[in-house]
Image (cartoon, rainbow over all chains, first blue to last red; front, side):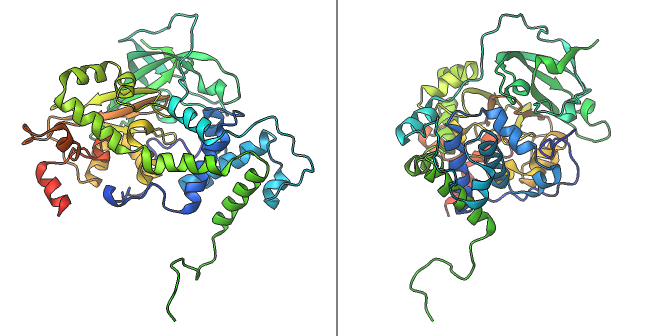
Length: 221
Length: 210
């Protein structure tokens, strides 16, 4: 199933209407500022990874995802994860206050100093690999059609299409597994698609380059 | 009757504001979030990490060939040497605009963006209209930003599906031969580093400053 987040190539989403760069604030409302901060702060508790975080936003009803503003989807995502990971109860979320008598914490909230260190060091997604990449530069590959219901980073618009490997990017944490808490590496490739191969009927199509993990791909003639 | 304070108390807080406030106070009450940490995180991305970092990188690449080579070779390391590293910049790659190629960056699946050099993405970058059409109709997207390419320039769209993050190195504008790195930085807009616009021309800079 295609989630509301998988937007590449979707028609009729309306004009972009960008705000002029010099006039756009980083946050438009105070609540957006808080949701951003809360998302990063709770992420630092180490109870979920970036793909679980993305998946929590994507699991919403596709219509709701598209209608929500960006930070509403983030809010939805952390509320879901906080409850699923048992850090708060659904009841507490509803009440807005702690209801369990004793708060059992096996996690500790980072101090500002620790948070700054986490932000400055980042978390590389590269991993060791004990296998050789299956595909090489210049090879034609096809993207498998996916019926998976879980998280994936293979957009629908390239599924079933063929492209050419233009770079091998190393072994990176595989999102489809990572989203269910299983940390495994897979080879990552940059694949180039000719615009004409993606959007048959549309004029002026351009080359699109996408990073795709090995399990998404199969050899093509 | 005149207001003696400037907050708007004619509108009650929206449901959303209340929902976020309730969540924040719950998390603080449960010891899951420290208020001072929350403020540090917000402060960092609202005031410290932003597109001026990227403008520094681009202007330096325009004047310093050795730096540019290092940047094209390993952008993560080259920008770390300027002090820009961390979250959402762990695997950075710079893509260069030339007379033949114009690069455009998007994340169709969410909002992946090189935070270390550009800060947080603008609202339009995260919006459905941009995410849907940047891959299928980039020419029309550029038009919406008022951007016109040379006829021989081909567009190359980068869909950020992995943890690789892409920064566009725009072409250096004409008429800037004797400009210093610091002067050049003013020409490097955030939008030019996403690829929806070109770097400002000296004339556009004059108009902007008026």
